[in-house]
Amino acid sequence: MGAPSFFRCPLVGDGLNKYPKLVVKAIEERDDQYVDASLPNPNGIEFNNLYLDMNGIIHPCFHPEEEDDDYYEFPAPTAYEDVFNNIFKYIDWLFSIVRPRKLLYMAIDGVAPRAKMNQQRTRRFKSAMDKDYAEAENEMLRRQFEKEALVHKTHLMTFEKRHKKCSMTFFKCHKGRCLYGCHYMVLTTMAF
Image (cartoon, rainbow, N blue to C red):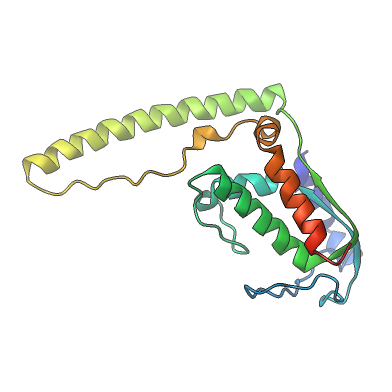
């Protein structure tokens, strides 16, 4: 069913009439200044817990240019340090909106099921074929540009997508940064 379908269920049909406060506009303090999370929530509702699916946060922090996220934009990362900065900025942003009083729960699931892995393998194969085709076309255009003495557009080196591995492996390698970020958040946030 998936999380999007699960959360869409109450919004379809009579769900909106049955649960009118299910989706509301959130008031956020979006200045680049510190938001005191111990103050009352400006939305008028106090929350005890905030549960985060970290996979929905990690992916846009790795590939911000691919996401159509109007809420929070990140610079494209060039190193793992940038990825972790993006992740913690995003969590801070969500935390400042919700302001949970008792619990912040961050869940990371493991390896994808076999069917999804097969689907991703097919998509990657197609992507590799498209990349080969684009490189061949780029090479042809480069030769044509050189022949006509035009300047060839160079590609800036960006963070390589192949560095993203299984989220568990990723966080095992960088658990020190994760723990530091969590401890820093607990120590600097007066809401807990």
